[in-house]
Image (cartoon, rainbow, N blue to C red):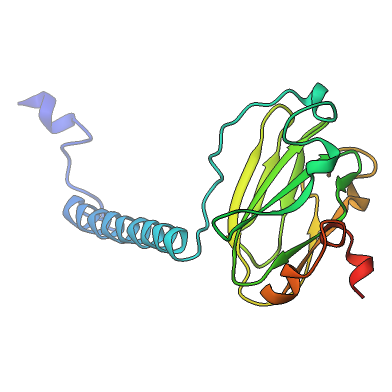
Length: 197
Ligand code: CUA
């Protein structure tokens, strides 16, 4: 028919244009390559998530930021490190512009540690470098992170969410001491690193 012979799509390809079957083969190869890369990345995410306990904190627990200092878990006398009957410890901290309260906490090595934080004002960040601890601290919610420190040492604890003009100066410390030494510390010494020098 006259129409098909004038149809440019039906005309034979000029030299230099890649034939359709070659394109199809190349595209299939790329699809396989991309799919295997996605699979590898997915395996890496799952493996590190399980092996290093690296995962987004998923604790959803609401709290009234206006009454933190008046009643409940985050009153001043309840902040710091508390030993639990099951041998673990719980660390409670308040993040506020521009400090963590308390500024230094002591925890025992080789012990399950639960950090519980909340904010008194705006969104702050809670990060312990080289550990699985990394979360936002959002006013109105309790952020909970579980970890365990294998060795003694001192961790700097920077706020890593921009929270205002003093953000860069918002730091605290976590000091990890041997289990036996921790047992001998008083409640005051556990939240005051200066007294342990
Ligand atoms: Cu608090 Cu940045």
